[in-house]
Image 1: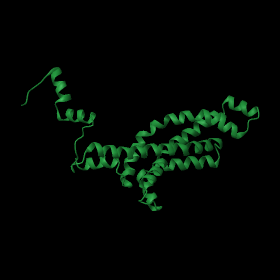
Image 2: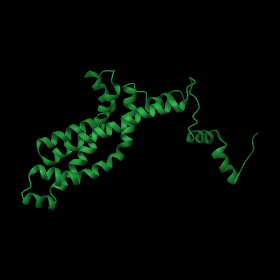
Image 3: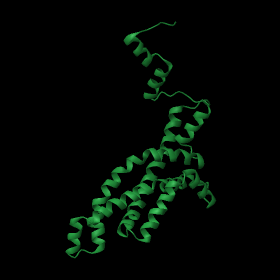
Image 4: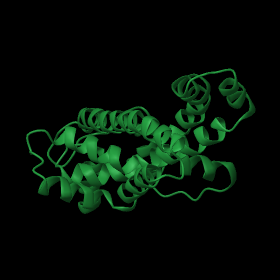
Length: 212
């Protein structure tokens, strides 16, 4: 039976009585029903989420593990050919789309038997530019600070200056910015899941769109 509502009753009915409101309520309680093949959506969602978040977190960790030494090297040799080589290489991987990098990986012989590992490597390459350039700029600013110059005047060696005085102060801003890379990482992750046939949330999203 249809009944016209107004005011607070209408607002409440939109939240709990409409089909969309009931769907949101069931999703919040993880009552997702079954898919077109009769499988429990909650179980399938959990399995896919584990794959997607594993890919995201491992790739982010790998990207930052490589970016910190690369950015530090570029900052220590700032203005040299090595600085330009590091900066240009990471910006090239950032400019290339994840689909292009995945295609190159297949051409280089990426085996289909280890798709998750290759997807982690490609996603790390996509995410490498921002932390590398940020690490370079942070460390370059620290290396010309007064306390670093004072340490050099007292006889501190180049390695001690770079690691103890420079890297320790420059790493914190780089690590804290990792969360800002998540939107780019999620988008690239969806593309790479499709390219490497990884049954994660990205593939499920594309399949849901195709099936309306």
